[in-house]
Length: 311
Image 1 (cartoon, rainbow, N blue to C red):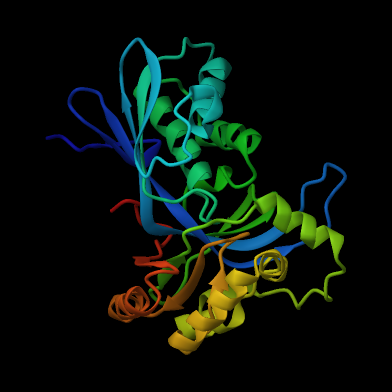
Image 2: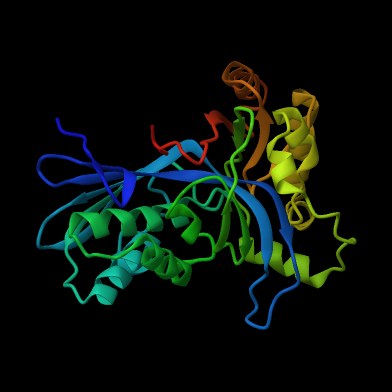
């Protein structure tokens, strides 16, 4: 079969029948600073976003009908186009290009919703890329990033989908490579927590003085253990306050790991970093043995900027 690449996004794969598939990776926040809300109520952020080898898949099947189907982990994932962020992305793209909506979108879900991993945002960005290529809609990467921002603050990151320091709402991206290989163990509880409630708690209670700004280029040159020990998440306190069970889980996992466990985004997924795949896999196995009733543990590799997510 022909798995040739497409110019606008090398991670797209086209089959001989015109079907296009694209990986939609999860992301981690390696450190997250949150600032007071702006006049438009959005909180400016500063965070190192990285894609990880844990991903959903979007498949576009060219056809006249316009429809969406969801496979895999389908719980709480709506299939109605207007209720699903993938469907909303597709509708916005066709409207912007003056084209009649068409194509069958197949979303295969692996990333759990409500876990702070950006799965829905990644799916939406992947749909924009794949539909644009499948139907030759002519949108540039910059066009797609602008459209992505209208769908959600972190959706633009997933258009280039490369390691970057993100600021503003997340749309100001500065690519950031790192010196050493990075691996992460994702620790996914069976229940999520509300992003809205986490931010409401952040706004309602006085925050401690912000820690010194991280020097991201210098941090990217550090060994994984130092990165893991240095990064921090301003939403961890609010998240643990509204979900004490998550705070307890984090402490228990940190004791088992012998190193810091972090919250990804607004949670509920936790993670910790390692310098090798075997070390990450070993800790994931330990967690599956000792905490199987409390978390799902997955080891993954963090992609460098030049790597293709999904490979």
